[in-house]
Amino acid sequence: MAGTEAIGDGDVGEEAPANEGFANGYTFFRSFRHEPECFVPTFPPLQNDLLLRTARGEATERTPVWMMRQAGRYLPEYQEVRSEHAFFDVVQTPELAAEVTLQPIDRFPLDAAIIFSDILVIPQALGLEVEMVSGKGPHFPNPVETPGDLERLVDPDVDDTLGHVFDALTLTRQELEGRVPMIGFSGAPWTLMAYSIEGGGSKNYKQARAWLYRHPEAAKTFLQRMTDVIVEYLVGQVDAGAQLLQVFDSWAGLLGPKTFRTFALPYLEQIVDGVKAEHPDVPMIVFAKDAPYALESLAETAYDVISLDWTMDPQAARLLVGEKAVLQGNLDPCALYAAPDDIRREVQHMLAGFGSQKHIANLGHGMHPDHDPDHARVFVEAVREQSEQMRTVS
Ligand code: CP3
Image (cartoon, rainbow, N blue to C red; front, side):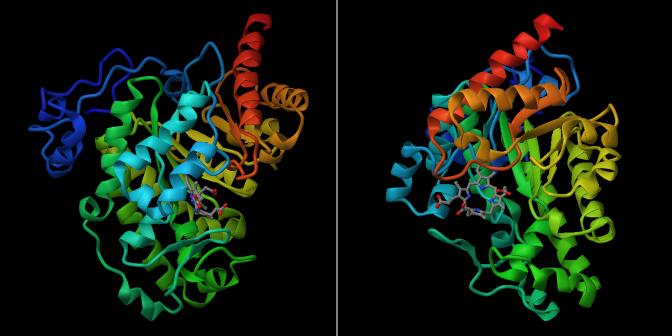
């Protein structure tokens, strides 16, 4: 299937009309996505598969690097696009999403592109309205307040409601010209439920957490509705060109070991198992932020990579997860506010903690809007240089 082959296989599908001028090729792809025998998108061969090899657990010549929220407001070229287009217009317009996705790739020697979208497209697909309020973040004008509100949810046709993300992936993968692999993503059910109930960001998400005790069965119904859509959504992303997938459980830290086992883990497992049933070779990353208690159980799932935030010590995490999983992370994004030499020293410390193999370098969370792009460059270049040196001396 397109998007899942290793480098060298060429990711080549059958000759398809997409090749006759791509401008309309991706809209064509959208209508024929479910008939792969008559249409498989064709992509340029991948030139840098370091991230994919590392994610599969292979030994590599250096540590791959990318940054969560690498496309975003700290880049003046992103701000320029946003000065003319609303956030969700960028997400919903494949040409704009592709442009913004490529901005950090054109600037820095990164080892992956992550498609420009948002985790909140899933609640949107389920019929919830989501606005992005500048300076404040996401806002749900009509949040899910009571179990009765679940009746407002719709059963979406994933192609109709989220096809713009598939189109953006196909177009971006073409425009990448094989420079680096393309990461697709989704939010995890618990994190999306927390936003949908709370109506946006919140200090302690106590309404969402209260649901787990007051309405446990309704919570499970809600989580399952999202899980079913997420599996279809991620499978569709791979069909459209994503070569690796990350699931963001950004609010896992609001749970405890017991609530995580009941309300997060089973759904995270359904997601990885459901996607791998269709695309067994696509590496998958899980990021359960602020949830060190979850590491051991995540290591027993089929996720290939476990992403760590900066509060976790890499060596302690390695002891908890064992040898199999690849680890990703985990420089504190605030370290990028330091002077370049200090950033280099922090990178050295991070790389030494993870060791030279089975590690994908990243931040422990996303870029901040007031980060200096030059400091992002220092981070990326330091990982490349120092991780190569680590291998020559060891
Ligand atoms: O990583 C990338 O470069 C890809 C793009 C991406 C965005 N959001 C773009 C975005 C990804 C992977 C996300 C995921 C996302 N969205 C998460 C999970 C990661 C995490 O940070 O934990 C979450 C929790 C969201 C929800 C969300 N979207 C929030 C809380 C906000 C506001 C953030 C803020 O700092 O104001 C957004 C908006 C958003 N998503 C922006 C971007 C670039 C900024 C919006 C703007 O341009 O005004």
